[in-house]
Amino acid sequence: MNVKVIDGCISCGLCTEEHPDLFHMNDEGIAEAVGPVPAGEEEKARQAAEDCPVSVIIVEE
Image (cartoon, rainbow, N blue to C red):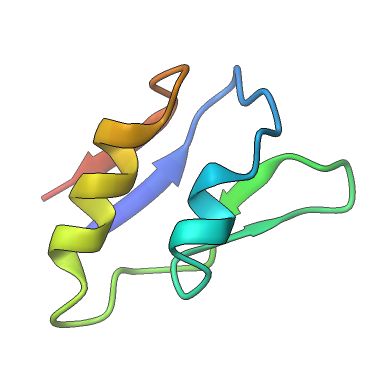
C-alpha cells in the first residue's frame, strides 16, 4: 500500500501529529508521505486520509 499527499495541502499538521511514522513536513511546510505504508499500518493511512480537512491524502491499495 502507498499513501501520498497531492497538491492542496494547507499545512495544518494533523497527519504529521497523528501519524508521524507515515507523514512529515517538507522544507516548504507541506506534508509528505515518508514512503510505502509499513505492514500493519494500513488502517492508520486510511484514517489519515479520512481525517484530512482538505482531502489531499490519497491511499493506493
